[in-house]
Image (cartoon, rainbow, N blue to C red; front, top):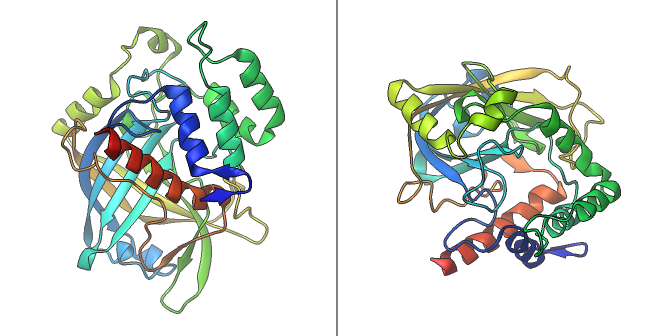
Length: 310
């Protein structure tokens, strides 16, 4: 697939250039932890969508928590986005995917911006790190990246995958039983509240602690998030995930996610799931967001390269 002057092959090659090729691993969000649980939709959401996700019946969920980037050994203290992918296994064999990150916005309004950042992140052979001048030039020429960068600078990384909010970032259409369409964005908020690392913990924590912490936490008790959908109004951006909607938009509780178990990724259910955000059940539809539409074929290309590596 090509959008403007950007192809999925270029993006995947740039990810490999930035992070290296790690056989059998995802090209992005390579470091991850699997989890399993359930979701129960709220009746209030069924007024907006005819999806069986909001039937009120318990739905099986296969989840994956992750760090952004293609390095499977990335430090859990990095100021990078955290991800949550959900596969809802609906009645009669249908699926619904949600692919989220822990920032309310993305860093790219177009695939070209994403590609240019990955190119800027390519390590300098002399230092093994990205060239600061290349990163500065990227930031100067791509103002759509500023919002997420500022958010990550102002918020320390989470102390646990379980104590973080996750945002859909894209606008979707919900379709009701009568055919009425509503523009929405969604987020998942933790029942225990958000908890972030202190500045001291940023320097003292081991490079890998999130997986162990989540496995141990779920062994003690399930962790829960509420799903909230924000109802769009005329003029709200539909096709730009770098722009956040005004905070006064009406929100409706759409259900509760419960995760009672987490496990290491190798051999677990989430390992081979693609978490394509365009796998949608009846009652959901995408908008013309170029990043959203580009993700599906890009994920497919990553999956093909991952399988070839295995």
